[in-house]
Image 1: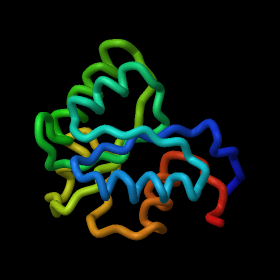
Image 2 (image 1 turned 90 degrees about the vertical axis):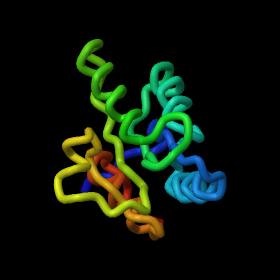
Image 3 (image 1 turned 45 degrees about the vertical axis):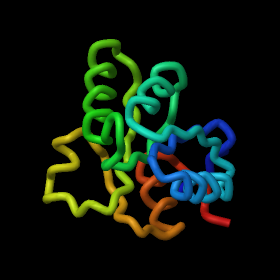
Image 4 (image 1 turned 120 degrees about the vertical axis):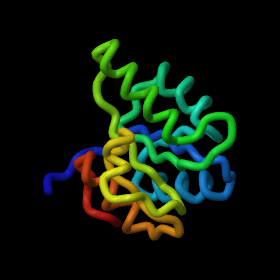
Length: 133
């Protein structure tokens, strides 16, 4: 795997739990990846519309707008506006049915509780990250 600078990578972290957002932010910071945060799908959509993210880590069960609805809107807008594709990784305690996450528009999922290597490996599926420190 070739090394790539991570200082231009920006990831949106979407979770209604402050501690999860904080933890994911610390993990991303460890890899020198910039992060923004949203507490629900609606807030995530607003941020996604104004900033180009290289990936999104998104919870599924959230108030206001859940992850399924948010990713549906993202995929629709990408098609309508020819916006570059944004990989969306579900970070969830829900055990999905086989194929249901892809059908919903997610590219990958990580089950809570997660480990630091799981986050790195999932992001590395879509981003050419340097080897972990």
